[in-house]
Amino acid sequence: DARVTQTPRHKVTEMGQEVTMRCQPILGHNTVFWYRQTMMQGLELLAYFRNRAPLDDSGMPKDRFSAEMPDATLATLKIQPSEPRDSAVYFCASGSGVSTEAFFGQGTRLTVV
Amino acid sequence: DQQVKQNSPSLSVQEGRISILNCDYTNSMFDYFLWYKKYPAEGPTFLISISSIKDKNEDGRFTVFLNKSAKHLSLHIVPSQPGDSAVYFCAASAHYGGSQGNLIFGKGTKLSVKP
Image 1 (spheres, chains in turn purple, cyan):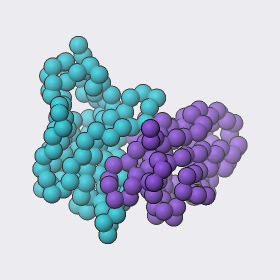
Image 2 (cartoon, chains in turn purple, brown):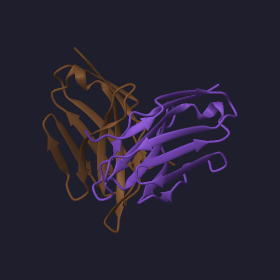
Image 3 (spheres, chains in turn yellow, blue):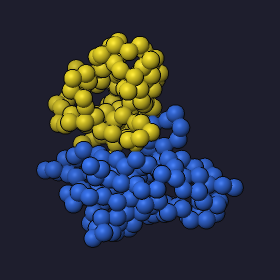
Image 4 (cartoon, rainbow over the protein chains, first blue to last red):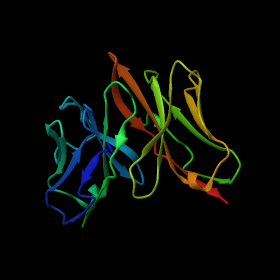
């Protein structure tokens, strides 16, 4: 059963703390997206990788956010330091790079207090 | 500046009737359009797509229509069922050199189908 796996599902942290969200893309997929869902902005694209290389991270606040793919089976999104306005659901999605459909994980609900 | 716009935040429809969800886009480079469905506490799931070389694609109760001159697409659900109640996201992508580009989403429309 191929699926995108995100951990943790829920995270509550204090302002100023580092947060790391992890994503395991579907095996064989070479394109990984990170999105943030908020009530006001819908699904915002934060970053987008192909073959582990970042192609577009213009949607990400560079001073506090960073996204990496240490290997083909793991993508990470870090926030340091976290702020209350970062509270949102963060989704990872993967795709084959040729086919356009992207498959989403269940998301990480982040609450920064 | 939003490249994909869903101007109706919500839509309420009676069971058995047609649901029509609308989406507008501004980037003429988009060549592939998708609809995703999202239930609470779950990730979006792919529903149906259409290439820019077509103007209609049908899959069961779901039909997507594309009007390139108007930069407008719509999703029709006929007949609507209570289980269709969810948030529907329109998305668009441009292919560069044969490879998938960014997938840009609208803000979503919450559909409620009443029994």
